[in-house]
Amino acid sequence: MHLQGYRVAINDHVKAGQIIANVGHSGIKVSGTHLHLEVHLDGDAIDPAPVLGPDFVIPPQETVAHDIAMANKKHRLVKERRARWKSRLAERQAKAN
Image (cartoon, rainbow, N blue to C red; front, side, top):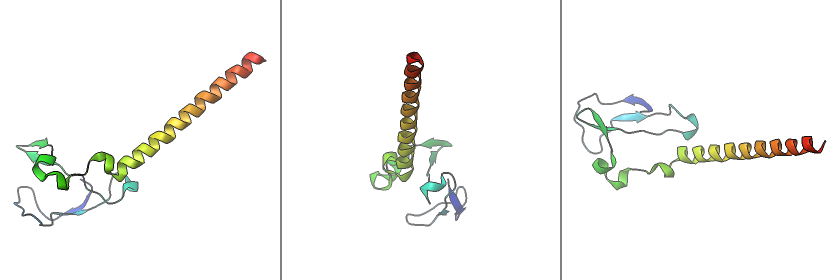
C-alpha cells in the first residue's frame, strides 16, 4: 500500500533483496514516504512479523504516524478540557448574576 509503482506482478516469485516496488506517499501526507506491507497466505492476510522476523518490523508506536496521532490526540484533549472549563466558568457567572 502507498506505493508509487510495482516492479513485480501477482504470483511472481521474488528473491531476498530484490526491488519489488517504489515507495510512495499516499494516505497521510504528513507522515512522508512510507510502506504498509501485508503478507497473505492462502488469500488471508497474516501477521508479517513471524514471516519477516523482528529486524524488519517496526512497532506502530515507533512510527512518525503514531507520533502525529498522539500529538493530535493531546491537542484535542486540551481543547476539550478548555471548553469544559469555559462552560463551568460561564455557569458560575450566570449563577452569580
